[in-house]
Each structure stands twice: as C-alpha cells, then as structure tokens.
Length: 365
Image 1 (cartoon, rainbow, N blue to C red):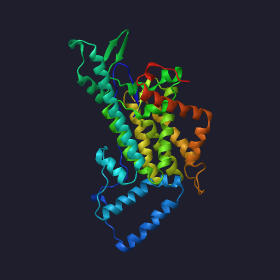
Image 2 (image 1 turned 90 degrees about the vertical axis):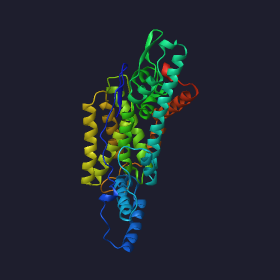
Image 3 (image 1 turned 90 degrees about the horizontal axis):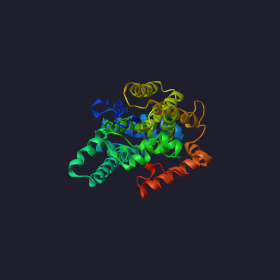
Image 4 (image 1 turned 120 degrees about the horizontal axis):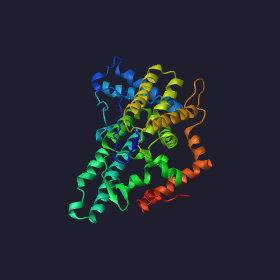
C-alpha cells in the first residue's frame, strides 16, 4: 500500500492478500476424460490463446492459469504455492512463465534491501564523527528498515531522520521537490520503494495474487502497472496531504482497475465479482488504516480503467481500440511524455554517479 510518510515516525501499511485462482492439488477434481482425449483437447486451447488479440489474452490470464493448474494437479504435478511470496513463490511465477511479475517482485524486494543497506551506511557515517557516548547502535538502522521508525537527530540547525537511505531521499515521491525543483521523475520512482517489512510483504502478496492476469500479455501487464504508478502518484501530488509517499500499490490498484473493465467487456460475471472484491478491499483498507494514502490507490485504479478503455478488447469487435505499444509510443512521442522520460533517465544517472545529490533539492531542467 502507498505510505504517507510522517517526519517523526514511520507508518505501517497493510493489505488483504487474496487468492490468485490457482487451486492446491488436494482441491482439484480428477479428470474423467480419457488421457488420449485430454492430450487431444489441450493443443487447440493453447493455439486459440496464442492466436487471440493481446488484450483478450490479458483478460484470459487467470483462466489459462487455472487450466494449467488443473492439468498439473490431475497428472500428479505440484500445484502452485499460495500465500505471501518467498523464494518458492518467485520460482513458481517463473515456472508458470509469469516472468514480468517475477522480475518486478524481485526488483521491489532488492530495492527494499538496498534501502536497508543504505540506511545502515548512513548511520555509520553519522557515528564516525561522534563520541562513543553519542553514537547510535546499528540496531537502530535495522529497526528503521524493518518497521519504518527512523530516529531523529540534530544535524546543524536541522532535525533529520538519520537512517533514511540516500536511495529513498533521491527517489521517494516528494510533493515539494516535484513542484519546486522539477523532480517529476518521482511520480514513477517512488512506486519502487517501500517503508517497512509489512509494506513490502503486503504489496508483494497483492502482486502475487494478480500475477495470473499477466499470462499471454506481459507487455500490457507491465505497461498498465507503470502508467498506473504514475497516475497514482499524480493523484497524490494533487490531492494528498502529506509531503512524501512511497509504495507500489498505485500500480497494483491500476491492474485491478484494468481487470474490472476487461472482465466487464468479456461478460465474465464471476471473475468480475472477484476483481470487484479486490478493489473494494483495497479502498476500504486505505480508508481504515492510518498513514495510508488512498488518493494514490484511487488515482492508480482510475488510470488502469482508462488504459483498459483504450486497449482492452471491446465487445463485438475483434481487436482493441488502441494496442498497448501504440499507446506507450504515443506517450513517449508526446512532448510532455518525452520530457518525463528524459527526466527519469537523468535522475537515474545522477542517483548512480552522485548518491544523495537529488535529495538536497537539486533543480532539474
């Protein structure tokens, strides 16, 4: 979930993990069709999915995942794991050819680990110039990394959270720096950072349950996620109250919004009901939990709906109104989109060559 950061303390965000629709092996029905007929029936389904338009494949993602799980369960294969993702979950996603979800989840987890390492290094640099009595223990950085509770120390005339990594300072969504210093790249980069172990786990859990929607259309899945991240942070920039926010839930809610439109257009009532429950749960949790930025959730979900209206398969038509490569290419050709892409590239370069410089308020052209 997106976190609204408070200067004095970290906030924990939670989210309800829901099932991806892949049943465990023990709950799967056994095949009553003879094996020779099952093998004869499988190729036509696969070939049909491969020949379908890309937008239709995204809508059929969970059905293909469920069919694959049933075939494996019926033939004695291991069923996909369920629950919060660990190493086995990433391997499961990779085995099911949900590569974008696996790589995206691994990137989020690695960046969160980099945040913790950066916070520890920053604390060590602070302790290097202090006497033994005034040094903070290394456990303070570990606690801040796990729970988002950053100790405040006086540095000159300022009081700063000393365990916040330079990675987070450079790329977190900051409304002031985005408005005054031209840091528009933060609309995207803030979605790849997280504030605590609960924050990252619940977002990874949601991503794991939504991963079957990727099947057959990885490009559309990733494009929807990126655009929804930007849309969610733009809504926070305009309507959010706190100064800073971070988290991938804007993009995750965008995937839910896309599926709402896709299922409705394909008239899949049962699947539409399941996706609507996910959307309702995300919004209600954002309203009930303190420190959660619901404007980013609603903005990301609205962006996903708009993307789906443009690129998902329309009822009564063979193809989508606008293929996702055309949508993404059009946004990059658009002057504002081109400037945004250049700002992201420049920020990434500065973040690697001069860590911490962007966090000081360096103005970008």
